Length: 237
Ligand code: GLP
Image 1 (cartoon, rainbow, N blue to C red):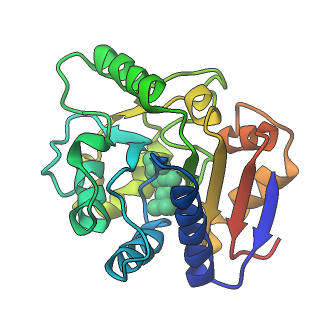
Image 2 (image 1 turned 90 degrees about the vertical axis):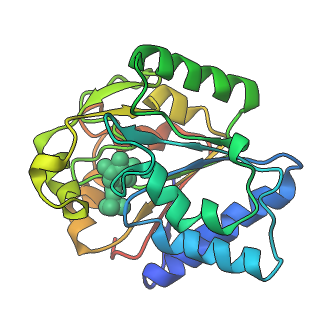
């Protein structure tokens, strides 16, 4: 895993957006894997700015999001559907039929996971996957202990994760206990992966990712075995 140290959140976001655009220009039908959370917010804003300046078009781009909470409707402002529309999709020329986000309201969640995997198989491979990391090392919603060969599945969220994400909700009680997430095996099939790590509160987990052996206890360490993964961080390492 390549490590790129940048000076601040802005530089990290600029670099990530440039990489996304580079990949979009290289492919006639680009396929992007997208993440949510605070970390990539500015990256998406920059992509919208570049779109508005006619530097990039999403017309032929397909996107797959990493995850979604179980039980939240796309219109729920705490859902990842809502997040993606708000930060990116509502502002660019992407075709809605090319947007794939697991449906947390599906009646049969297992079937939803299978359909999501099937869509990646048909449209993929994902050319570039953006990732953030949770304080416990999770990627997507793959919590510590998730097998490295896991596929898209229903995940039970750890209390630490619900606590960390409760800042987006009115209270911790509203944070769902389950989510649908791309599996680690699914994520690892992306041709290229960019892991964004920003802010002092990620210092400890960043150190662990860098120093630890590859272990299912710290899911993000799996990226060290990927042939084309880059960690971009504004933290001192
Ligand atoms: C959530 C998401 C992850 C994300 C992580 C970190 O749990 N499921 O995909 O990477 O939060 O979020 P943040 O960028 O807000 O720190």
